[in-house]
Length: 337
Image (cartoon, rainbow, N blue to C red; front, side, top):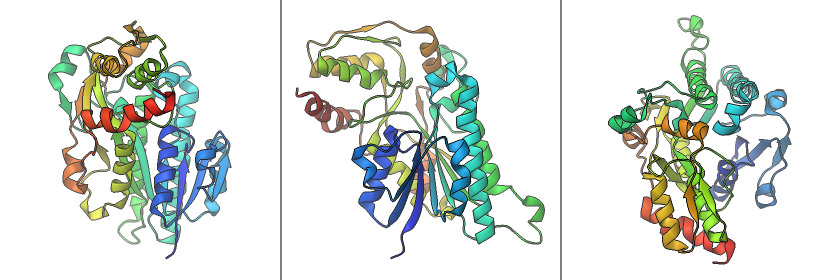
C-alpha cells in the first residue's frame, strides 16, 4: 500500500503530539512535521522528517513535497496573541496563507486535491455581553462571528481564506478549464484538555491547571470567575474529530467549517472535581480582567449538529468519563497520587 504523505505543522504542541501519535498508530502515512522547536523524544521516532524553524520562511521548502493531507496546527494562541498582536497576525495569518497557496498550487498543477485540515476555535465567536451569552446558549457556525481577540480574528479570517482557495480561487477559468481545487476543512474546537501534556498557558487552560496544581499540593488562583462557562473536550476526541473530518467523503460535507462539542462546565465545576479528587486542594478565584473578558466573549456551548449529520461525529468522553476514565487517572499517575 502506498503511504500517504502528511504534513503536521505545530507538531510539538498538545494537539500536534497527540495527532502524530494517532497517525503513526493508524499506519499508512509518511509523517513530515514542522515546528519552531525540535520534536520531543516521545514522537521524534514517528516522523519521517522534521523541519525546524519559522513556518512563514520555511514553506517554500515544502513545494517539493507531494502532500496528500496538511494538518495546519501551528498558531500563536489567544492570550499570547493579545500581547503581541502583530506577531500573532504574522504567524496565524501569513503562515496559513503561505500553506493555502501551496495546497492550491499543488492541487491545480497535479490534478489532485490536497486536503487541508485547519483547527479553528470557539475564539472565532464574539458574544457582546454576559446576558447575551447566557441567552444564546448553544450557537451555530454562522452565529455571533464577531471575535473580540486577535487570535479569534485570525482564525475566522483564515477560515474565509481556506473557503476561498477551496471553492473560488481561479474561478475566472471555471467555464473552460475547471481547476482542481484544494479541499479545505476547518473544525472549531472548544477548550481542549490533554492528560499527557502540560497546559501551555491557553485562555481555556484554567480547568486543567487547577487539577495539575491540586495533584501537586500547590495553591492555584483561577484567573476567571467561578460561574464562567465554556465548552471543553478531551484531547482524544479532538484527534478523533480531525481524523473523522479528514476521512469524510467530500460529497457528504455541507460546509467548510464545523463545530464540535463534548461538554460545557463552569470553573466552579472544575474546582469541585479537583476537591473531590484531592480534598486538600487550595483553589481560589482571582479573575484577570483581560483573560476574563476573552472567555466571556466565547459562547457557553456550540451546536455541532452539522458535524453529527454530515460525518457522524459523536464524542467518546462526556464530563464524567472525561474526569474518571481519562484525566484523573493520568494526573494521579504523573504525580504519584
